Every structure is written in C-alpha cells, then in structure tokens.
View 1 (cartoon, rainbow, N blue to C red):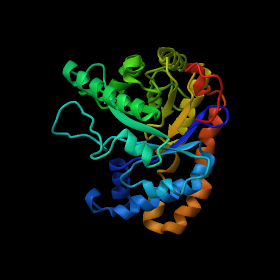
View 2 (view 1 turned 90 degrees about the horizontal axis):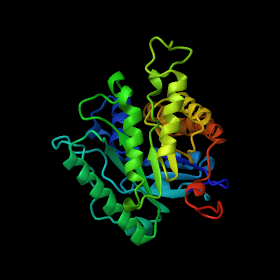
View 3 (view 1 turned 180 degrees about the vertical axis):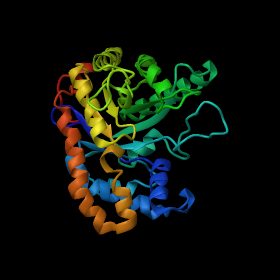
Length: 324
C-alpha cells in the first residue's frame, strides 16, 4: 500500500454512483442510462496511466476488477467492500456490504487491503451510531480473520445540514475529531483511517477570501488540523472529498504547516474527474492523452505535497517501512 518511505500515495477510483452522476452530467443522460462499459473503460484508463505514480489504487469489485489488471506492477490493490450510496428511505445513511462477498473473498480476488466507507456523525441518534459501530466491528473482525489490512473511510456529515454549507463548516472540526477518537478504539480492528480534512477549505481565510468573510482564519484552520491529528492513535490518510486538485493541494499545505502526522492520501476525483467529459465527448484516445498530460500533472501535484507525510509504521510500532 505504501511507497519506500512508508507513505501511502494512493489513487481512488472505486466511485460507482458518484461516477455515474459525473457521466450523466457530461452526457446529458439519466444516470440509469449511462452504459456500464463507460465506467469499466474509464477505470481501466485511469489505472493504466496514473498508477505508475501511485503506491496503490482503490477499486470496486463491481466495475473495477478489469482496471486492477491494468495497474502498474508495484501498485497495491485496495478493494471496496461496501455498497455504493445508502437507502434514502431509511434515516441515518446506514452502511451496507456488497452481497455475496467477504473480506476473504476480496483477498482471494487480489486485494492487498479492504476498504469500507462509513457516513458518521457523533450527533446522530444513538441507535443509528450503535448500528454503525457494530457494522464496523463486524468488518474489522472479518479482516482480522482473513489477515488483510482494514482501511476505514469516514465521511463526516450532519443529518440536518448541508455538508458543503457554512453551518456544517462551523462544526466539521469537531465532527471529524470525535469520529477519529471513536474508531481508533482497538475493538474495531481498523488498521488505517481515511478521513476528510477537518475544515472546509472554501471557508478558510485566503488571498481570495478575506478574514472578515472566512469562518476560519489560517491559524484557526491549522489548529483544527493539529487537534485532529493528535486525536488519532492509528495511521491516517486524507481523502479529497471531491474537491478540485489545487484545493486539495492547499489543504495538504495547511496540514503540513500544522504539523499533522498524516501518512499520505487516497485521492480520487481531484485527480481524474475532469477527464470524464473528455471521455464522453471526445472518446477513448482523447482521454488517454488527457490522462497522460493533465491526470499525471494532477497526481504529481498531490504527491509533491506529501514530503511532510509520516510513515504509517510510526503509529503501529512496526520496526521498519517494509512495503506492505
């Protein structure tokens, strides 16, 4: 999963419903009219052209296994175990595992690690969070039994707020930090946490956003990064949360300035999402060229911001940075 330094510089393209929406928007179709083959082909292209610059790639068993075979020789493979999205008719954004799979079967399919995504808010109803905690414990037990590393992706939210809005931005630092504290408990058997940065970068003081209009000053934002980092007893990596490439790079700069002890990234849409309309409107050869130029530039921009990332093994007591 990691490079020779013990830093996880991983690429994510396990998106399913989110990728369908990108294709639907680019093509003007409804999501259920998007050809499945588009997803399969696009994932293959991303894997082929970008994994030479990544330590690993995260894919899904539904559309991503052909792409797993196109990855660079030295790139590890994470496979997603959760169903995409959640049942909107049931409150609480409850997680669900893919049918007819286990952690062991994912390992048998070639996975070097297993990942699940969990929507989590410490403000949710206690029964909802008890259900989610039991679900994570189950997955952790499966991964331990299969002897495969367990990556837990936590997506922060609030049931009554827009996660992209100012109201949630004010409470996001606490939501992220409290979630980290919960899932670092040994009972969950998590090996690596995948988390969003603890601030919404659109509300951080910058050259284009004066302090009078910002929710966080730069010093306040850095303090939130520091607190979230200190809350984790496990190796943790940042996800890009669908933001633009430079926005994610700016977040990594803040993390570095704050002294965050993150162990890398698992970055998806910030690297490849602008290639979707190229694929739809100009075809496979055009997206090859886009990935070789812009996609590579995007992933290299992220990688350039990992110089301060800490080896995963520093938080585990492992003796060396041998490639996992």
